Length: 145
Image (cartoon, rainbow, N blue to C red; front, top):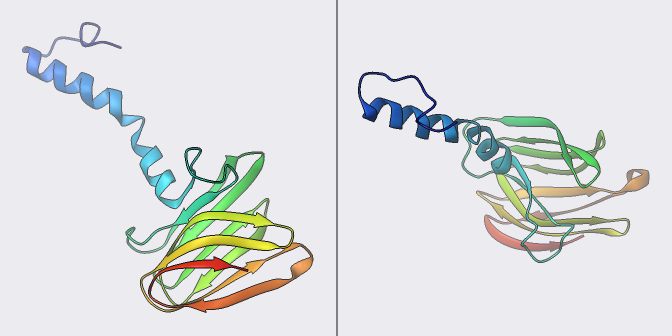
């Protein structure tokens, strides 16, 4: 829809503002979605995911996100972060708010960068329920589990 198709509001300024606002309004939900989970096709590993948040207030949760043939759910809060893939928890962190980048899950383990706002315990849950974990300090850490 162009500004010529919008109803006239008496002056061009109102029509121009409505046109610009309407064109961006559908993209607003994408920002929140990508703050919680995102697959960065321009990053290093094409299988890598980004999830979690250091900046969203309170606890934020999103479910039913389809990426690369899987359905994801993420919950990120001040003391806990959880990632589920196809209904099964595959990552959890406790003790601090975390943002995970370049997360690649394999049958043998996982690799990722984690940025934590305090000390945290992180765990990756593999097929068959095997758990691998470690503690990370505040700040950025590279993790191989």
